[in-house]
Amino acid sequence: MGLFRRSVPSSVEGNAVPRTVLAAAVNLAEVPQSWRARNGEDVWQKDAWYFYDAIGEMRFALNWLANAVSLCDMYVAEVDENTGLITGPTENQVAQKILRSVFGGATRRSQAQSTMALNWQVAGEVFILIRPRRNQDDEWLVLSSTEVSERSGVFTYSDPFTGAKIEMNSSTDMLIRLWQPHPRKQTHADSPIRAALPILKEIERTSMNIASRLDSRLAGAGVWIIPKELDFAANDGDPEGAQGVMDALVRTASASLNDPGQASAQVPIVLEAPGEQVANFNYQTFATELTAEILELRVAAMQRLARTLDMPTEVIEGNGGSNHWTAWQVEESGYKIHVAPVLDRFADALTIQYLRPALLAAGEQNVDQYVFAFDTTAIVSRPNRQSELLELHDRLLVSDEAVRSEASVPDDDIPSDEEHDRRFIEKLVLQDTSLIKDPSVRQILGLEELTVTQTETVPQLPPAESTAPQSDVSQTREIPERASQSDESNGVTAAAELIVFDALSRAGGRMLTREYRGQLGHVPKHELHTVIKGSPNAVLEGSFQFVEAVAPAFNEDAASLTRKLHSYCSYLISEQVVHDRETMRAWLSR
Image 1 (cartoon, helix red, strand yellow):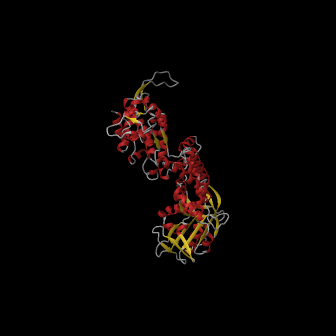
Image 2 (cartoon, rainbow, N blue to C red):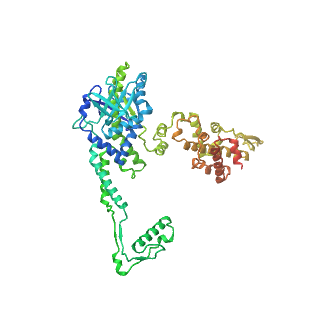
Image 3 (cartoon, rainbow, N blue to C red):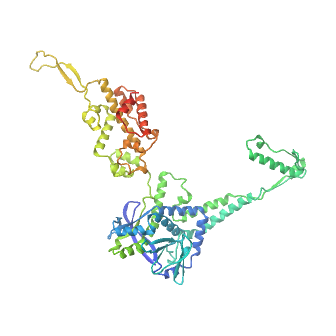
């Protein structure tokens, strides 16, 4: 049996803190006596597999962990020789080629990891068979303990796809046994299910008791003892006496079931009997009482099972009391405590038994710096903190990079310096519309130059040393105190265009869901609606809030301007066309 240790960082916390893990793995082709050392205690494993098939709650919980393991991507990493910490994925081409063959490649590796995790949790051990093939990658199979057998030193296995018994070649095939050592006898496997077997039997028996009680109710509706002299309002052809009564009851009940809306379904059946016979009516049932104690026993057993298995109790009991935030905490703690150790053991075993020997065979030196590791980002997802980060960003407490990282914004989507300046000026102009008259502001925004002038006759004061009256002269002033009609029209167009850009940018941000991130960096945000289909009402909600501040400056009705701009932007989004200034002018002139 090979015991080895490796220190790996905790990827969940994000800190380079090593953790020592222990794995047990051995190549049975090299150490065949390890197989005989494990024999003698496989009865509990058969019971464990039986309950995996019989108890749905346990099966769900184990599949939860197996699914989490299957989502993690395996890679070859390099470790620091001084600290033993993983420094990141390796660029060694030989190591990358070896990785591509593990478990038959990336497409089959996910299922192999799931099968390994299930065997690890149920039986406490799993077998990995590696068979070399000429001019092809090695063949990899994941086998349970029931699929491997040994006789007179010869190992055979059941092919998981055909069921055929196949003899292994001890000189070429590699059979790795990976197991959780039992603390009393470390050559034997152990798992949480072993300790849970009495609890699982209790769950099974309470479930069988409940099922038998339900069956007793379905076996018959009991016996109703009525006097023979009983009479009723019979139909023509009905038998006399008790049989006639029963026929009438069945006929009436059938009619009620077929059409419960009839008034007759709610009217009682009238029977006539002598007064002295009324006391003789008697009903006997075959059903066994379904007591609350049985149900409580099963619930208590399920709670014990949840505390016994190596996974969060919420997985078995359900997340009914969890909200978005606490569900994430369960998921993250579930990874750190339950999923990560399984991944570490798998990585350790395959590193020692396969990766490093394969690197040596390929002529690589210093193979101890290479290890298998797993990327767990697919199974650990934190709650959406974007709104919180945006608030901190507005207060200058976090960086732009922190906000982009939380939103998974790729570098291609980072605005250029020119776009950043333009959008900053847009916000300033929306807050103070008088800035639109500044030529430098208009140049940054790409607006037409404002060249309207006005000539006025202004009296000129005489020089200080002279009191002689001077003649009037003409003086040109560039910006009038009160804009002409053409000025006002140009101003409305400019302000409206900024509001449109703001609304379309907001809409583009809402359309840029996770599935599109990293793919549309070449498309400006205010034009994303041209490549992504969206609902105008949904993506424009909350836009046009600056109209109230802009409209009075140009003698415009705020409500009317809002309706026109909303209608125009809805048209752009519905038809997936880009904004056009002249089209917008025509829309505003309606």
